[in-house]
Amino acid sequence: MIENIHLKELDKSNYREILKLKVADNQIHFVASNAISIAQAHFEDDAWYRGIYCDETAVGFVMLELNMEKPEYYLWRYMIDEKYQGKGYGLRALELVIEFVKSLPGSTEFSLSFVPEEGNPGRFYEKLGFEETGEMEDGEAIMILKF
Image (cartoon, rainbow, N blue to C red; front, side, top):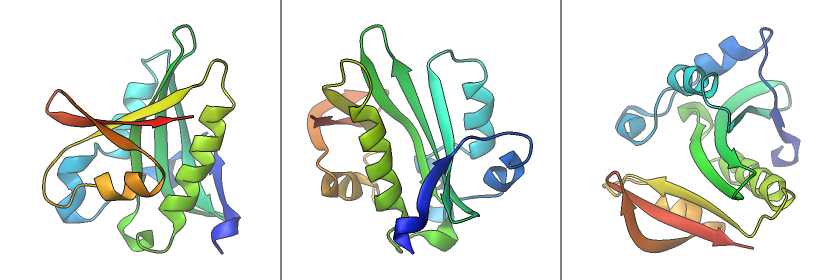
């Protein structure tokens, strides 16, 4: 079933599915809602976002900041709905995102940040090769995946 994970552009036919997704209550302070993310994406030229799907079921959301001029690529938002966590969907979807980022012009690394509190997703990102840099930005720990 994990092989059926794919990233899908949002449009008027499917954006409501993504708006309904939510993380567990104890994770809410780690990631903005999908509604906020989609609104921000419409006002940021560097935003790239997709729904995460298993077959035709929406299971998550990803948003990147893609600065092609520098080039710098950043995982801005990443979430898997609470009902679909722990099933491998998040790991497989992020592998797809990493493959995409590797294919971008001048791509040598991919960065992200997370709130360094109890229950944070740092270990999840480490499974995919991200390493903490020791730097903090706006109270969040920075991680880098070098290609």
